[in-house]
Image 1 (cartoon, rainbow, N blue to C red):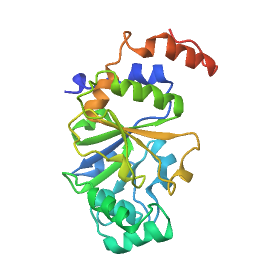
Image 2 (image 1 turned 30 degrees about the horizontal axis):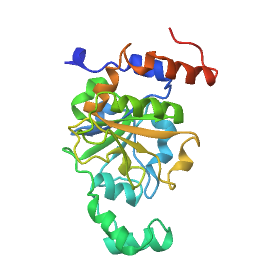
Image 3 (image 1 turned 180 degrees about the vertical axis):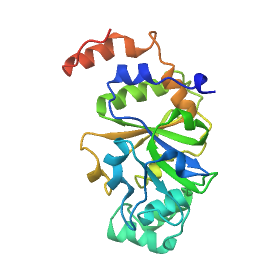
Image 4 (image 1 turned 45 degrees about the horizontal axis):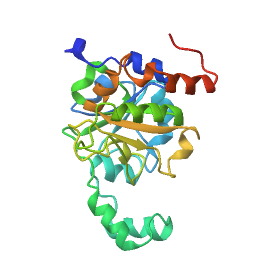
Length: 242
């Protein structure tokens, strides 16, 4: 099984992505993901972002989910009423023009429901592919352009939009898809509440497993080996790739 999994080597090399991809998993037993981090109550899960990049895995559950937003978005825990949530987001934080608009957004975006009770956010581990839900790349704007171009490489105008951007908390944008079985990607880390925990020139690009497979198949016929990408890298002072 493992030998048939996508090989990300060429993709990461050609895009100069050096931060390790992050996996979002739903698994029956967290032990295989050690070393584990259990979040403190009411702490943004992105407070642990550097530790995740360093190789640890954040373990979320209905008992330990960090901030209320993560509890609601990825663990299915109702930490406050919809009315209280809407009031906070509109009146306190000013994230929508009206209560009615925010109510519509909250009702439309259902919390992620995993197959298993444990949510794990940590290094991409090919050997745990069966529990993998999404893969997230940590990117700068140039790398975002490359991945977004790669996302549409095999897409036709009749296909679902290859890359989407949605309103939501940083943690909810790790699993923003209506259908995880189609090739699709999403731009993340647009939530101002979590951005202080990542570098100012970084965004997140989250993909479904089918989209990850597509990106890993980009070959010498693709733009990654052509002039536009080479010229952009040259303008940034990056060495020529052979």
